[in-house]
Length: 246
Image 1: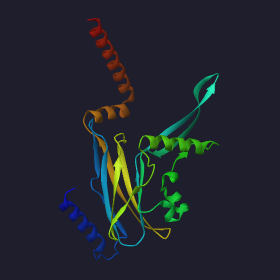
Image 2: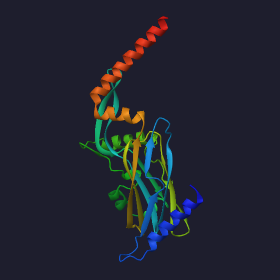
Image 3: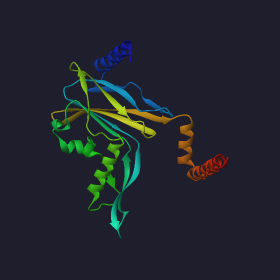
Image 4: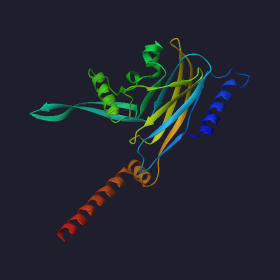
C-alpha cells in the first residue's frame, strides 16, 4: 500500500474516533484494505490488511469467519480384516473458514466463559452435531484438525500490533482454497476480562471467469453438471484412444 494511502487511512480512523457527534465516540473502529476477493484460475491466496484504532484501553482480538456449510466426519474401523468407514458424525452450519488475531494471548483476556459464548478462539468455534453422541468431541477435534491442515482454520493466532497506544493493525491470510461466499471480520475490545466494544466488517469472496461458470453449474444444476462431466470424460477417453491407435 502506498504511503499516501496509509496516511489517508490513519486520518480517516482518527477522524471517526474524535468527531463530536451527539453520541459518544465509538471505542473501536476498524476496516479492511479491500472488502472483496476475486478468485480465478491464477488465484494463489491473498494477505489483507486490517487496520483500526481504539478509543479505550484493552486487548484487541480479531476473528474472521467464513460461510457456513454442513460436514460429515467419518472414522474408519477394521471389519473382517478390511478398514471401512464405520462411524460418522454430522455437523451443521460450520464455518468453512476461521482465523484469529490477537494483541495478547486469549488466556490473558481472562474470561474463558465469555470467549466461549462469543465463539472466540479455535477451541470455542461453534461446531455442533445434529445428534449428541459419546464421541462427539473426538469427531469435532478431527474436523478442526482437517480444516487446519488445509489452512482454513488458525493453528495459532496471528499478531495484532500497535502504532502508539491507539492505532492497530494485523494481516489476515486467506489460502488459495477458500470458499466462495460472505465472510465477516469481527474486532473485539476486551478490558479486564470484559467485552467493551465490537465491530463487524463484511468481506465478499467471489469466483470470476470460467471457474465461476463451473462453480455455479455444480451448485445450481448438479444433475446437469454430472451429465456434462461424464460426457467430457467419455470424450477425453475416446480422443486419447484415437491418438494412441495412430
